[in-house]
Amino acid sequence: MTKHVNSADAALSESSLRTTRATPDDAFRKARDHWLKGERIHLASLAVELNIGRATLFRWVGNKDLLLGEILWSLYAPLRERARRKVSGNGIEHVVGVYHRINATLLNDAALRRFISQDPEYALRILTSASSTIHNRVVQANTRMLWEQIDAGHLKQPAMKTESLSYFMVRLAESCLYSDVICGREPQEEELEEACKAVRILLGGQPG
Image (cartoon, rainbow, N blue to C red; front, side, top):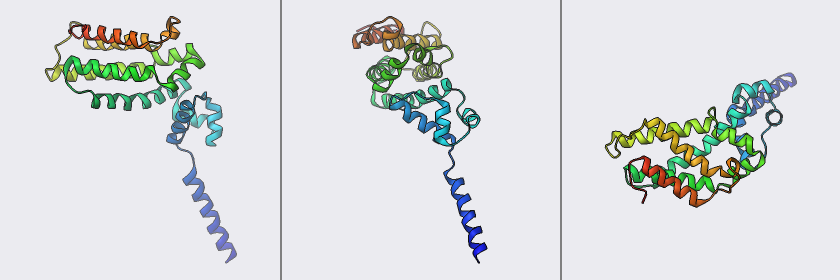
């Protein structure tokens, strides 16, 4: 009888371990929580927190740069969707409205500003380099939005390639959002307004 109970207890213990073992989603959520609190992410420390090996963590999330890119995108994508739902209209007004709403929010985002202040050069690379996850996905998202408007007849075919226009839109926003790192000047709402005027012109509209 005792042997049977001990076996059952052992099975229950093993089952509990299986159900509480960390998962890739756990790793991502914990890393994102650290980032939102302004804490630096160290993969070795994260592996210890999750009670997993470093090799397992690297297999789940890749390197630190890739993990940060996914964290940033997970926060940006819902912001973009909310902006698209909130901004009415079509064509130039819709595109510029979405563009302004997203970047005005990012301009005042406390977690993003902390990330930049901790290590400006590293943050700029994660946010804007040619290999940046967030930069490339934002360019792709802008391109899709432009094509949606063009295909629906709400926007004329731009004079340049749609992908190039999207790229320039993103670079204009980055020059405003990260001006403190790029040229030592604090980000300003006025510069974002000027960027929106430039986007309007690129789309074939009047600066207003």
